[in-house]
Image (cartoon, rainbow, N blue to C red; front, side):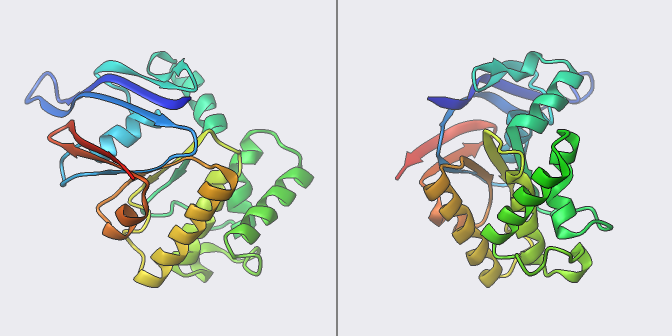
Length: 227
């Protein structure tokens, strides 16, 4: 069953001035449990597509369904609530809250979901252990390496038990060892727990680990390779 479906997705920036066509009719289905990399040269539309799938941007034409719901027609408030419950994000820049500890960062979305303190603590500690940071629970981002911060970001994305996780260039700021560790963790979560991951990436190390590689060129799907 497809957890993500895009149909005829187009995105035009500056339509009233000098139009820039970032996406030109993208049809794509992502099944539950996939480990998919969206690749292509700079300007091919990778991040734009990821943002539209994640409800951070809206298509100019076409639609996006997540779990059978058309998110492109949702109101802004409904979309915020939907993202909070169904979509996890891992960004290139980590986007951790500097004044919060690792545990508090992981708990943040669950706090917005009105989960109990006991439930938040238990889930956060479970996830930080899963990403190898059980001894960093009380550390703030400035006390962690880049690789450790990105692992906290992965734990935070997993915390609300989302339908899938979108990772936009998650290894761009990491060295080779940190990248290998992060990909090992993501692959294990994918294989053992069935977590669906969709990456936007230039990183060959990520591409090599993906089981499906979707190549965008000039805003269109040029190749869709399953391994």
